[in-house]
Image (cartoon, rainbow, N blue to C red):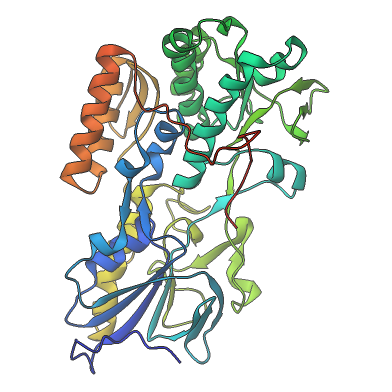
Length: 436
């Protein structure tokens, strides 16, 4: 049995906390747990924290992946009470207070599940196999490579094949889909014609497909209408009330009966949780989220917690659970760190209450929509607010500066030098690989 206790730290009285997942919730929990009371083992399949709101900018060659990816060992350097292991959670054993991973077993006093959610393909294996998702830095780089390779292939492709190569479909009209569509539209209009003089990019079609009756369904109808106007003005084709029935890598089949030849399809149509072996079925609700109380405690346990996107908490203000956004994850984790300390001292725990500070989405240069509890606005002011708030959330000063410089350069020149294809050389150069 492996232990989370460090040999260099006299921590006999310390409680062992295992945090599974290094996203917004897991990272904040590990950072805020009292080092005098807890030893922490952070387990993640990756060695870095990812700033998901800017994945789309990596995918569209606006910033480098290193600008939004932060190695855990660098974040926690000097923190001897925090250990890190690269592993995947296989099962939990609450009765014996252990977890099993692909590198071994670990015991705990408190277990916190913060694994987030993954892309929801609604059980369609063809769609899962043949589309691109945008849930990791790796996904962002994969999309960037594929799109750039597509434009290279267009140069030599026969006329009959060009149509499918020049069709890009983005499925899902939430913030991710809207931001991707806007960014690709700007690339089409401002950058690609300068790079590929022999390609008629008026034939490059960017299509945003949404199953409901409007885009940005998490925001007000006014914001959705503003985003719709922006995207249409930029040349994006919007198809609402439309579902994708199937995609074989060549042809996209829609619920309207239409079939679209496209070799570039990005799936951003929803998320679902991961099923965790060892948890009783009654704690799992719709979307494979884990039902928790107001303290993020999993139903039926006294030392097993879930935070962030994977957690489903019902409150009077949010009877159907909280939105799966970074602000919820961060603040649940911060409160849980305080509550674990209170639990250890037999003090009453504080209930979590989500304070909605606002929602926003950017559509492109000088185009965004922002909703605060006290006001809504759009256009250039909204775009500036969006940039400022996202910049402030970046972890390091160095990365803030790098991103700010990239944004400034892109704004002034309408160009970027980050269009590198980073794949092994080969005859096709277009292998669609996804991490296990």
